[in-house]
Length: 300
Image (cartoon, rainbow, N blue to C red; front, side, top):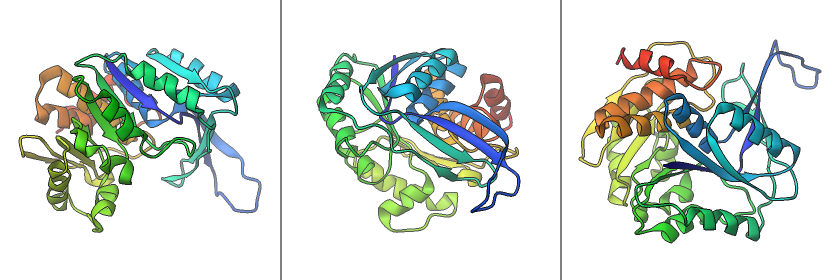
């Protein structure tokens, strides 16, 4: 079973206006509300590809209830823990300004609630996959990812980590199966600017030297690069298409990679499925469907 953890899930309110102006009343011309958070996005695309997963994490208040309701509508399993106080965040994302968003803070996570999650993770079995993705609330220590992996070390769990900075670096000693920084995040780790796909492999190799098995680097409109554990470099441009909504495209890449790996145990196939899924989500209002992903796969 694949388990995804979203520590700070959200309702993503995706809006479009015409001629947005600061200091004025702006009215939407389109709007969309979706359950959000990187782990939830991974579970959504896995479901679209016919793979079961269970989404774990924390919710609170009326927005938390709505996240759970919408996740159930999407059709995958979830076991969110109600923290009892506050409310799950709402993230506002503006379509006409790609990458412009206002993200809520989210509820405080009590020690009791965090321990309940850790006890649930203790039940994972050898061969299960655990996806740790995204930022964490301020109320949780920034060592939480490495703490979880230390707690589960030696149990045969397959770890996938999509995080930045120290949150990522601190888990490498536990040899995650897959990490997925983007090229900006990878460059920040080593104080360099990575603009082209050919620039990526040497720095991905540094992360392998620190413990990562497979390093998948997304590069937005320039494609992606995978340095697999056999030291083979896979590099592809983005398939042809029109950018519609980039929200969740990186998470879709993770889901596509995992689905491809589960299907054939072949890194080349998993990489192509990853970049197809990420691109298909970017070319769609919603997260990618199986048909959209496979259609792009045929063009690679």
